[in-house]
Image (cartoon, rainbow over all chains, first blue to last red):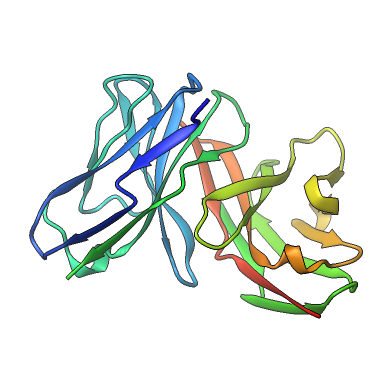
Length: 112
Length: 114
């Protein structure tokens, strides 16, 4: 049972480049979300999804797109990377109730 | 809007001493509250959660937290710190507001001195 799998673990981009952070879970969880973690700011919610075909914005959605075509996958797209998007990104999933979040190991992104 | 405040970005205790990490929340309805722990270069993992069944919640590794509605607090404690407790701790609140949003506090880094 792999849980939540994120790829890549590390990525360096130049300003203006685009990329996709991949997230997959094998627990059949309805709810998935993306957070970014920055020093002193905790985790901030970027986008979340309550099921396939349904997504919504979190606290800091600007500059990021998501889609949810299957229950298992929830990719995060950066359309035009900016240095302010340098961060550690975490994907998480949760059963469809007030349960705990299950986190991936994180993806460290640096934008030059 | 709901929010979570963790008092103290850094807490330092001696090994064997009491650990107290503070968390206050703002919510118009009773929330579901969580404490997560993050070890270096890892994702977060659940320590404990409050879901209104009992005000004193016991978690893993000897940690516990007490929900106090009158104080809107959910402080995390452990009677005796161990070196392995050194990590960053996050308080979080989840509400169903058109979707299950979990909002995190800024985190408290715990240092344990030998």
